Length: 253
Image (cartoon, rainbow, N blue to C red; front, side, top):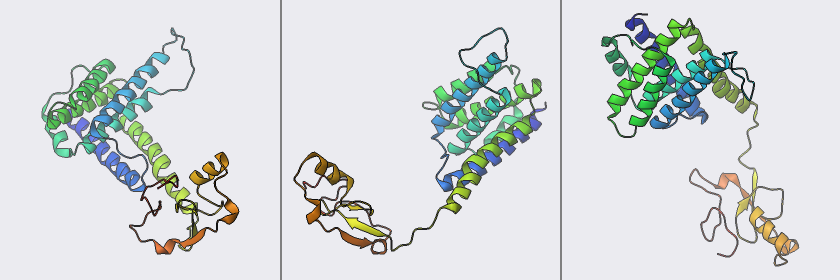
């Protein structure tokens, strides 16, 4: 495969992963990891690809039987490499720079694993641009390996990104749409023992309730929880002890 074709594939992968990450980040799910952690995840994914190839060997007997796909694991590896480039702030420019270098001569799975592992090790101590270029070369080598072994590259990447999008974006949005919107007048109760605000359903906050179980100091019958309205709290409001300003209070402040 020509290098310019490989670069086109990687640029498309970057665009698709960036879009997926943006949508998932907005929903607060499948949050983009730190740049160096993206490479650490890529190491685990390429290891799973190696595991999948070993499972295909009938000579070996494994302790556990599970359905694995070399193509899927390589697709996940590519997604994490692309995620690193996104998290590290690299754009298409660093990919285009790789277009001038020759097609990787060693396109074995071991070579891909070595390049990814080296990029991960160097990510905490080397220049980010150097690590970025090394990551792009790892992607080029991975794409070349897939092409040499007859693994459909575009279909694999589209399938894995589509599955992630369904899991982390489409399903999450559908679930959120089914959730009822709670009215702003929903009541909150103030614990008569420590002033911590809590939702209705018991006579005091869970911390003081536990203390009540353990001792006879509190007498719930004497307490009359104060009702609060959520509309009283602005965007800067908080739920916590009004006396000691702690998120949790044992009532001894």
